[in-house]
Image 1 (spheres, rainbow, N blue to C red):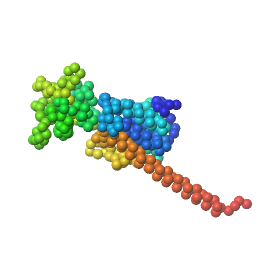
Image 2: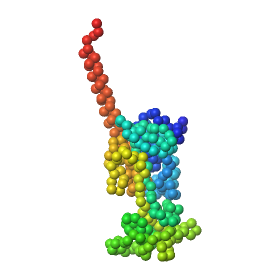
Image 3: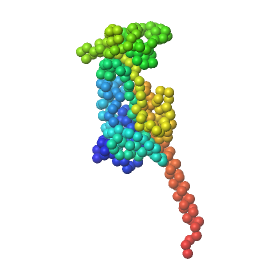
Image 4: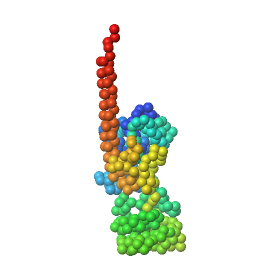
Length: 334
């Protein structure tokens, strides 16, 4: 059987040391470290990466400008070389069992594992503005650290679609001197106006944003309800970020005010044996930092496995000693 398995071929009989849900940078990094530690590991991947619309990945040392899909291809080949099982499919539920978890695949078997590493990222919920989704990741953007340098010095519009939009406008100003903030129907405070003015950000007229306008497959502007088109070549907006963690519903993992699972510095959630790495636990993670989170979690997870194994071995050793001692005390049969 090949290292990359369809979900219908995956074996549900064996106990894994860890099952990683999500085959992006964080999940594959966790699997790489665990595979090199000679652990029995599976990675379940549904093939729906958040950065799929982006043509290139930036800010990853030694991989700057690499297509995201190419990074994942290399990563899958690397982890396969250490015996990690790659399973194409979607995890539906995770259920606790004594000292382990059972994991149901959609249309497939149940896997059993001692630990679960959730690396499913998040999804960007975009405002219902015509044209936004079609341009997403091209010239309608969110992260200036990911895309700002490539669109530098072009006319930007920042759309007021989120409580953090003003701060986003203040941030992207360092990538261009030509910035206009389009408040839409979200009111600006006097403090907002003062900060935008101090930063050199123009403010467009208030009014509902009707659509983004394109010409020759390029962003041309942002149309308002009064018919005005605010010209721009690049638009930034702040999406609503929602963690893809529904597979853990019912386990009772603690969450913060933003709805993300809380973890310690290694990725441990409040439920022993459940880990969260990358964007599923931290919306700010870039690809390179998500990969680092996966590696850090794997390092700590392996130490937890060692501790459990040592404890189990000590218990077995003591039990054997007690049995031997009791046997020595019994009178010999006549």
